[in-house]
Length: 257
Ligand code: SF4
Ligand code: SF4
Image (tube, rainbow, N blue to C red):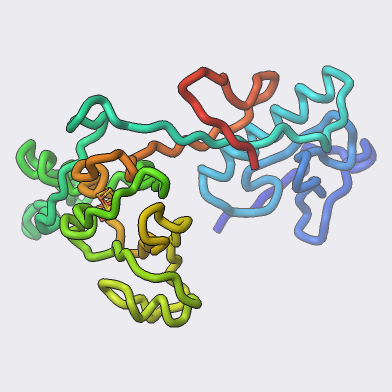
């Protein structure tokens, strides 16, 4: 195995070490007990994955920038998010919105005999161009989400008819436990999130969507004659050292968390 080892850090320079013999690091600022010395990655809290190491680097950079600017390290810039409609025309979208229920492609592997001949050989051969095209079409577009504007809905039922996974229902509003049983596909698992709209203009019913079933195919938005359903792209806006969290444009509606 491998251990963190810091014999090269002198123990009398103000950096405290914990019982694992790694530097004591503030989880918000990534600063050690000595001002101006920052630590992240495995050296701070033991093995984590590389994604966390990158995040630690970002956070430490924000702290270093604040320190150089004479600002409080604990004042962290906010994360932001925005949602932008992906509609490009009457029936065109900026992403592949067609619903494709094809099976997962089978990856080819090097034959066993060949693998044993040379143990360093790469076993997975990857997808061929045709398989790659199929796999790309299976993408669930997790960054594209449905947005509903109840005031635009004329209750034509077109979205409910077209949804391939039956996750939309228009119904009287009821307490959640009962509502779950009235859905086109009943949602009996209380851990499944439901979206319930404002009252619809004509009948005061509500549009309900089972968020766990939605495959983000966009067919509801494609079919909706009034654009009550829209497909919007979610962007998480990450703060960087010395830069604003986002660049606001007239097209981007912004909220911060
Ligand atoms: S995007 Fe979701 S709600 Fe809309 S049709 Fe597709 S699966 Fe149904
Ligand atoms: S297709 Fe549009 S207008 Fe028709 S019921 Fe669905 S959301 Fe409402």
